[in-house]
Image 1 (cartoon, rainbow, N blue to C red):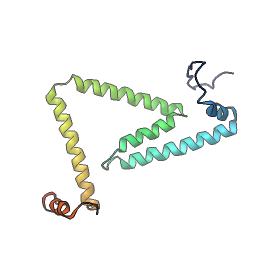
Image 2 (cartoon, rainbow, N blue to C red):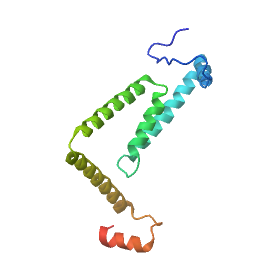
Image 3 (tube, rainbow, N blue to C red):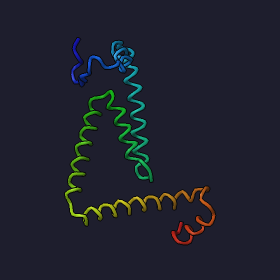
Image 4 (cartoon, rainbow, N blue to C red):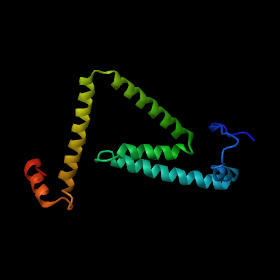
Length: 147
């Protein structure tokens, strides 16, 4: 029995417990495979789009986008290729930053912090302060941060 064209083959130790038997059972049934792939596609697309929506907000927007791509990559080769491409670019970026002088690294860190703080300030300015902030801190934020 040969793998469908474009599918990745994962080599396993023959003595290893069979944790993926459920996946092979799904792949053995074309109708179940279609339903499974559609469900993985819907969930992965939803998580990816949710992450893209969250990107401008404070929080893990890009991590949610990557999680969505990882869900899609579990079943779709194009998403697996995209994840591999992202991993390679991130590794290149990290290696380049590590080769830079400390002053350049500190500048990147300060710029990143400034962008995060600007997005946080804008979000709080537009949506208002959460009610769980104690009144003295909220008053200080209104006076000094113009929120």
